[in-house]
Structures are given as structure tokens and as C-alpha cells.
Amino acid sequence: MSGLKLITLKEGADAADVAGSLKALGQWVSLAQGTQQPVLVVEPHSSACTRELLMDVPGVADVLAPKSSHPKLDMLKGQAAIVGDLLIGGDSNPVVMAGPCSAESEEQIHELAAIAARAGAHILRGGAYKPRTSPYSFRGRGDPALKWLSEAAHQNGLKLVTEVMSEHDVCVVAEHTDMIQIGSRNMQNFSLLKDVGAMAKPILLKRGMAATLEDWMMSAEHLLAFGARSVVFCERGVQGLATQTRNMLDIGAVALLRHVHGLPVIVDPSHGTGRRDLIVPMARAGLAAGADGVMVEIHMNPKEALSDGPQAVGEAELNAICASARLFERFSRVSVRT
Image 1 (cartoon, rainbow, N blue to C red):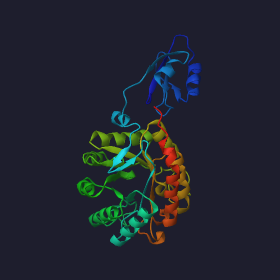
Image 2 (cartoon, rainbow, N blue to C red):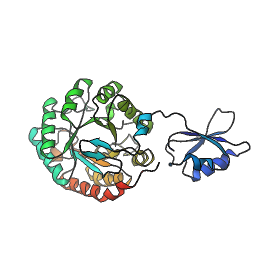
Image 3 (cartoon, rainbow, N blue to C red):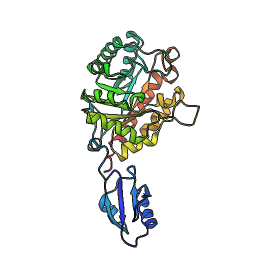
């Protein structure tokens, strides 16, 4: 039994005692405010627990489950997302998505696709259109880059994921890619989500820079409601207090999505740290938490990259990440609790 639950108490039961018993079962419990009789609220991210087990707690009168705010997402619990003949999530093995921040040239993207395939990656990532903080930064090659990415991916036996930024580009991006990426800046761009969902393709949904887990899940619900076949969550870091890293990679959110909600989720340690020296260890941390894959930026010469060079790794680091993903294959088959 997952999701928000309300616990009503038997007459004379002590709310603190009942809450203590529920917490011992791994439940996150708080006392509801503004009710005439004591009511305990069990948060959605509590450990999975059957209604029968909760009803056996001394002092519990009833367990109520309000209607879910994301019913379509709940229906996908434990299911893998399908990208062509590739599975992400469920009982499938971890996948690796690798490629440049942006497709700089046809030659570059073909060389990097070959590197990704040699290392054992499954999906080529790369941007044709790049949302940048500065209006003076490199913003991608646009439509020609879509063709380069598609050809390079399929010539090397890889699937392709690339970002769409505008409603005007949805159809052309959907034509060239196997999986459409919604970037962090567009996570709550509901007009874009509607158009992307209507393409009936698998979606990679990056977390907004300051989005809560519920915000993120509701954006996924929008995509599914508008027709998306499946949604894979991508934890790419949120704004944190540390200045030594670009973002704070929220490993706890990965564990919650995977083990409590049973949803496919990958980590992006490139954006999550912004530091080449931290990408491999944080990729491993994400896999250890249950991530269904890793997305990483690669470049032949990161110092010369036109965008995000400091957070791109070379072939040696990519080999290490792919080896780690293979090492964690046996852990990916642990069943999700219901």
C-alpha cells in the first residue's frame, strides 16, 4: 500500500503511542492539524506496508487512502519503460546514456558515438538545441545536428535521446529520436509537456533545479495524461548550499522513486556535480541507491568543448562507468516492494 494514508484512532488510543508503533514499521508519521479527533498522516514516501499490517497496530481504527494525485504514474509502478528493444527500470539491467553536451560537428558526434558503443553504452545523448544561462554561450547547431545524432546513433547500434526546447520543434525531434528529453528548465512548461506527450514516445524527464519530488512526479503525470507511453526520471541535481559543486545530486530522491514508488530513474552526475573528478564516484553512488542507469557527458577533448567542458569525461572514465553499471546488474533484479 503506497501513497498518502490517513490513520484514524480508536477511542482512548494515545496518538503518540500509535505514531511510535507506525514509525517502527518504517512509516513517516505526523499529526493532522485542524481535526476534531486525532488523525495521523502517513507520508507517501514511507516504507511500503499493507493495509492489514497497519490495521494490526494497537489503537488504529481505520486506514484511509485519499485519491492519488498521479493515478497514471501509480499504474506504472514496477514496470519498465520501453525504448525500442531496450528496457529501463523494472527488473531490467542498468543502462548508460553517453554523449556530448551538444553536437558540435558531424565528425565529432560520429567519433563520440563510436566511443560510447565501444564502452558498452546503450543510448547516445547529445543536444541539437541547447538552453544556456548566458545568451552569448554556444546554443547548438539546430536542425542539422538532429540528423547527425540520429545517423551516428543508429550506425553504432545505439538508441538516441535528445532534448526538445520548443513546441515548434516537437515533431521534428520526435521524428529523429528514440526518446525525447525534457530538460530541467522545461520541467513545468506544461504547453511543451502537452505537445511532447502527444507524440506517444518514451520521455526522459529531468528534474527542475528547485523542484520537489511531488512537482517532478506531477510533471510526469502531465506527460502520461497527454499520451506519453512511459516516463523515465532523471535526477540531475538541485540547487544546494555547497559552492564546490554545480548542483547537489539528490541520491535520496533516486532511492525513493525506485524503491518506494517503483518508477524508472537514472542519475546525471555530470550536471549533478559539474566536476569531472566526481562524476565516476557519483555515478556509482546513484547505481548503489538503485538507479536504473546513468547519463554522462563525454568529449574527446573536454577542455576544447563548446559547452560544459568541465563536466565531460573521456573514454577511460566512461569505460569505468559502464563497468560499474555491469557490476550492478545483479542488484537491479531485486524486486520493488509493494
